[in-house]
Structure formats: structure tokens, C-alpha cells
Image (tube, rainbow, N blue to C red):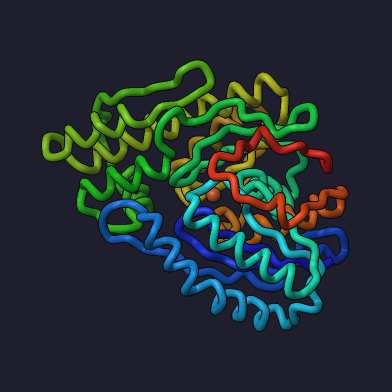
Length: 328
Ligand code: FE2
């Protein structure tokens, strides 16, 4: 079957077209347009305007690239949550319109579970502990008894947000992640900063405040090294305990922060030490994009999941562990 997936949880409006020919994920197109901010955060009204402006061009370009017509599509899927309400709403309206106008089934799917399933499909890992680290989200996830359980998560901001804000305060511009990652390997001295793991959960805002306060007092490479070191080690600690608890042997790293060499290196070493294997999908697939709902849409549809248009309201706070996983 062929599925058209629409993603609009935050800064990116994206449309992907995917088929399951041969039982695997075949990417026919994955087009997107993102809001880029020089300063400040994401403003809901601006996100909505951006997505409204680019939704149709992105859709047209995806159809053209995939060389398919709307009549060839078997399913319209979209990210139903979690995310920013104003952004989510645009994707949902586009998806409902496409489904109703073309007489196609509609399926709203969870964004975080989308990250997990596209990651599994593109790396061939079977039953991983998932480290999902992005601007808004930081979760350590694993399948257990019909759900993707959240073993640990951030109690305040996402890891990507920590890096973005710290980078902005250092005057690095956007995106700061790649520059910070380079500085991580250039730092020579560890600067004492908070390290906050509470049970299996993480907190980054104290670390952020302390690091920002030390800007100008320490070498910026040392500060970047110390901030990233603590943040990555906190994530690695929780991921390792999740591996130990579940006795799983695979670790899947996804989300925007998966681009970080420092993060990959630390998780890679931890996996090596305990005989586990680290999987990282191609970077484009780690980011927010239409592949997430497109592939999860196919997976769920084949498991028999259906949705009526009247039940397709977006859910800004939909939890990873609220989704019935009837396909694993
Ligand atoms: Fe995401």
C-alpha cells in the first residue's frame, strides 16, 4: 500500500509518500519546509501561518517526486500529537481534506511512536531501547506488554532546547548544535556543572542556568564540553539502566540530537561495554518529517487500526505510552 504522511507537530511542515512493497519501508518522497528563527523561540501564530503557506507546495512537490497521483494513495496519515496546537491543526486539516475529497481512509498517529517505528524500519533493529532526543522531547522508551513504555524522560526542557538556548547565549546563531558538538571535542577542562538524574528522569534547566551564568568566566570550549558531557552522560545513564532492566540488546538513537557525534560516541561506548548495539537511522529520518506518520500509518493500518474523521482531533499532550501497540 501507499501512504501519504503529513507532519506538522512543531517547526516543520512535511509530506512523505511511502510504500510497504516487499514488506519494507520504501521512501518515494519526503518533502518539507521549516521555520527558522534567528532569535527567540517558536511563536504558535507564526508557525500556523508558515504551515498554511507551505502545506500545499510541499504536498505537490512530494506527489511530483514520488510520481504518484492522489488517486494512487491508499491512506492519509498525520501526526495527531504531541506538539504545538497551532502547528498540529494545519497538518490535521490538510489530512482530513485530502481524505474526504479523495475518499481515502484517515489515520492520526503519535509523533513519538512515529520516531520509534521509522527508526526501527530504517535500521533493522527489532526490539530496542529508544533514546529520543530533540528540541522539545527527551525520552528513553522501550516496548513492554502492548505499549511503548517511557522508562525515563525530561522533567523540564528537551535536550535540544538546552543546546539551542546555550548556543544562542554564546552567540553561535542557529542551529548551534553542530558548532557546540565541535567545541565538545575541543574543550580541555571540565567545569563543574549540575548533573540531575532523578530516579529514571532527567532535568536540564538547572544545568542550562548554571552554564549560562559561567559564560565569560570560563573558556567557551571548556564550558561547551562540560555542558554537553553532563547532558549526554545523564541520558546515557538512564539508557543504560533501561537496557539493564529490560535485558534488551539494542539501542536506537533518534531525534535531532542524534546528529551529535559526542552523543553517538558516548552511547556507543556504553553499548560496547555491555554487549549491546547502537543503531542510528539516516539523519534526515531522525528529524521531524512526514516519514514518521507515513510509515506508522501503514504499520497501524495493517494492524487493523481505523479512525473516523470526527475522532481525529489533535492532542497536544498525547503520551507515547497512551498508544495501544497492537502491531509488535
Ligand atoms: Fe520529533
